[in-house]
Amino acid sequence: MKFVVLTKAAVPLSTAIRIDPKTGTLVREGVPLSTNQWDRDAVEFALKLRDRYGGEVIAISMAPPSGIPALESLIGMGVDKAILATDRVFAGADTWATSYVLAKTIEKYVPDYTLILAGEETIDSTTAHVGAQVASHLNIPYVYYVYDAEIQGNKIRVKRFLEDEGVDEYYEMELPALISVAKGTQMPREVSLSRKLNAREKIMQATNKELGLDPECVGLKGSPTFVATQTGATFPPRKRKIYQGDPRESVKALVEELKKEGLL
Amino acid sequence: MPCKLWPPVNKEEYKGVWVYLEHDGTKLKDVALELLGKARDLAAKRGNAPVGGVLVAGTDEMAQEAIYHGADKVVVIVNPELKVYTPYEYANAIAKVVAKYKPEIFLIGGTKRGREIAAFIANTLATGITADCTALEIDPKTGDLLQIRPTFGGTQMATIKTPQRRPQMASVRPGVFPKPPRDVNRKGEIIHESVELNGRRTVFLGAEKRIERDIADLPPVESADVVVAGGRGLGSAEGFKLLVELAKLLNGTVAASLMAVRAGWAPHTRQVGQTGKTIRPKLYIAVGISGAVQHMMGIQESKYIVAINSDPNAPIVQNADYAIVGDYKQIVPLLIEEIKKAKGIK
Ligand SMILES: Cc1cc2nc3c(=O)[nH]c(=O)nc-3n(C[C@H](O)[C@H](O)[C@H](O)COP(=O)(O)OP(=O)(O)OC[C@H]3O[C@@H](n4cnc5c(N)ncnc54)[C@H](O)[C@@H]3O)c2cc1C
Image (tube, rainbow over all chains, first blue to last red; front, top):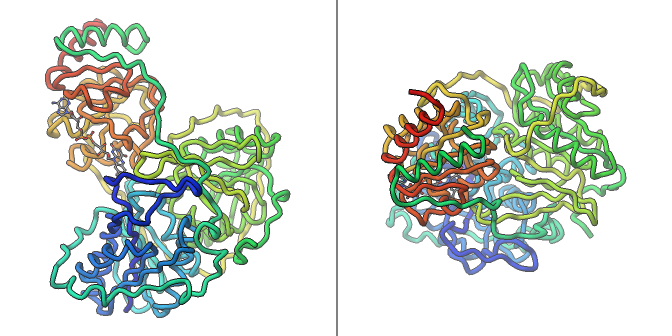
């Protein structure tokens, strides 16, 4: 069985970010990237499935070459091999163009995949789009927010939790299929240095020369959406009355204000 | 030359603002009504374009309810194969209806299910989509939809456009837009469509309600006028007892920051913020919450923000209407006492 995990080499939120003034997109080149935290849950889930059913786990990522260390760490977790789709023409992609490259990479290099796994969402963009869009490009069924799965023949049974409704749901899908793994449910295993040894040999890079995709369908050009402007977040102005010092006096002053505003 | 995988679109053919009408089997979800309100607003700016709704396996009463809340036309998909929700099949069916009616804008509620199907629908229609918009506007120059969303962990606001493709799609979390008034005099059209499924690939096997222990028998955070929220600064689950007492006194409810939820002091259904709920109460009282941008994203629509925090430099103190700097263990009991006095309660 072949378990393909989609992993994003994301910009850690602690990094000072840079926005390309021309495209309004995040500059990822030359920035130290690390695997999106929630994708580690998906990797862990895939490793458990492999340990149980046999086969291999293949991580797939689209990123500049600075995404390689992130993939090395995944090899260190136990991923068998990784494929990095990397090319300047892929830069500036929205989720349509990203998922297109990922789907085409899977079709070309892992055509006999059993299951594709995605993280629930990324920490830097939080769209949760790419999983469903890869499923759409490949025309396979999919279920999101999965925390448990069982494979029987050419079918997979999954359990998922819908937070907003407070319900667990059970589905069965034909394989191949795609799942997104609920964040925070899998306790990703540690990166082991011995496993990480020779990680580079297990990482394949595919440029658009190999993938042969229409340059009009990838990167910024292949993105139906584009960022018109990007600015720092601001919030509506507030009164900013700050009370310090004697607690009882502060509380009295606050209660007076709340009364005045008709809030009590 | 645009990407050849995208069939050419004639923008003139695309008219109106449509909404996916998610329901729970008995009634429309609030987010569907909220989006109808926004849809009317956007349609007005597009020369009084029509407002439509897509309902899967819903009743005519639900369709009627959508009309009372602003829809001119509701398409009900009646295929018995779609009685029960499965993502792949629902997304395909909805995409077919949208492709047929060609709205200029198509909006989906950012519930868990909505987020699950939204991007698949967009791809099927070879168009773009923007997730979790917090504002939607019409570009006065081009007439394009401006899809405004927080990004990069909520530190940035991006305005996104889909200039070449139609429909323009966006998802919006529950509670971001107000619910429009219900007007029983509104008239509209209900159309039944039996959409063909190209085979079934997903089977629903069953569901179970998970019982989560709540901290108090208090209303949900999205419906209360007064919300008292606790963060990591409370230090323990015990701290929430004080907040519950304060909330009850104010006829309000309690909420929590992500950190308080992570600590297990409150259930996730009470989390407010970017990955929690967006609320718009009259009064929001943040106790032991630092006011990280992601938290602020969910509460910025509050009429008044009160902060109780021991750190005068905490961002919430700067972003509040009223802030008391001090230890909540001292402040909150005093506050309860003073409010009781003010209300004449012994
Ligand atoms: C993608 C993403 C999404 C996120 N989504 C959300 C979200 O939806 N909601 C959310 O809340 N967060 C969210 N966060 C997390 C957010 O960045 C913060 O980490 C979180 O809000 C901090 O929680 P807190 O304020 O309770 O804790 P802290 O930041 O630890 O703040 C505790 C505060 O309590 C004060 N304090 C300590 N002791 C006392 C005392 N005795 N009396 C009074 N005050 C005291 C401290 O001064 C401090 O200001 C998200 C983060 C990311 C990256």
